[in-house]
Length: 636
Image (cartoon, rainbow, N blue to C red; front, side):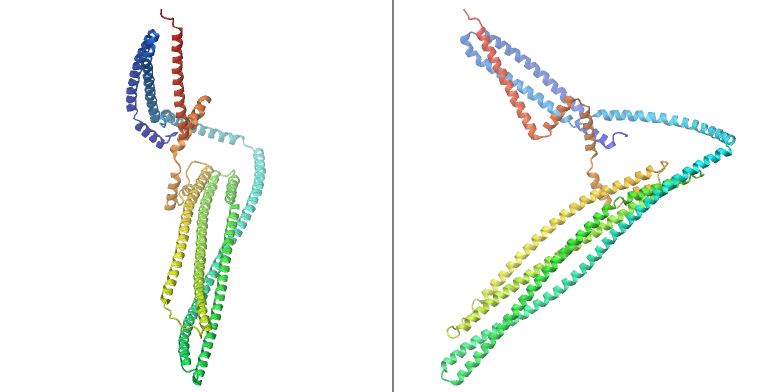
């Protein structure tokens, strides 16, 4: 249909089919019969109540107290019956309103069908009339052409031809001068924009090259840091083995000292024993010197480790600063590219001016009708090529941005791994330093109390080893939990970025679709005849068969619901056609129906108002009865 879409008509048909108007009318007939029965019953009850009231008025005053309760009960029963009938009518009305509240108005559909039938009839009549007029116009055109040729052959003179030629030439020169000025200005603007675009592209290329060189340098530094770390670990292992060897030698020397002490005690006056004791003491001093040397080596290794840690932290900070600088440069490049967004529009204006130049320069020639068509086809071809180039550049920019983000993420992961390795190495160094300090303290204690304290067996050595392993496992578990939390946060961030990317892709698809439709409309508007062009067809179907376009086309079209748009348009039209009072009532009812709280407040208000009316009516009836009793004459 011309005015109402087939989908809207199908939706209205399905809705009215679900309403089942025939069944609804049968239900309403039954409801009407029930309401009529209720009215008859109510009339009978009111008559009975009026008769009871009359009888009550005729009852003597001393018997009225006894007859008052049945009369009051009858009034209460009548009030309850009225309430039930009112609820029944309200429920039936609400059910009917619920069935028809969202039903579309059939009047536009019927009117559209009638208009379409009339339009078809009028179109057929118009086509017949057009055919008849075309034949008549063709005959008249042939006659006018013959008359014009005859008059032109009779009336043309040399002087008039020269004057017309001079005027045409003068006007042609003026138009050419104006057009050349405009074309020169547009060419200058195009050259400036091309130069600025080349500068921005060159900056972007330089930034990419700088990023590649920085990445290579970071990889080289990371490899050198890994080699240095492996060397430091090897040195630490050597120091650990030397320390174990020195500890074993110290234990052997302590046992030998104990034996020598026993021998010295047994052979105190012997001179040979004194020389042996001096020899052993000399060996103990050598062992102490070696222990001191090992401590010095350990301190130097600790200092080198601290220096390596500070260098790694400085390198990580420098990498972060470089990444931030690259991001800033990329943002500046994007902003610079956004400044040149009007390049395509200016180029399109230039092409239009070129097509106008072609049309003006061919005045007076035999093929004047072909020049606008050629310019139009050239303009369409340029628009299609430019659209493809823009899409290719957009894809390249997205790929470069994705690659840059991946590189930055890899650098951050490497920095995190290096930090974790540094923390682990620091923990190992601290634990080794604590063990060495403990061993040094034990050695000093043994040396200071050589003559008084004997060597005690180390029965708890295995327990210390197990305790140390437990502490290391616990520390490793904590590190793994931290890494797991970091990975979970990264996964959440990636999910959010993926969702944001999906939304951005939908918006970009909408923009690309708009650009394609704009290019198609521009080509069709500049075309002299309604004949479709192969370039406009190509512009219509550029990459529309790819899976990515189909995916985002589905997502984009799902966000558009023609039923909602039609419903809002019809609702707005009907509301605008209402009067002021009807519009206020509609706005109030929409506010009440659209909010659950408003509906509850309205229901409570109606219930209270109903209760107030019933109480007032009851009190009024009591006062009227009391007044009638007071005005009644006393019975003699």
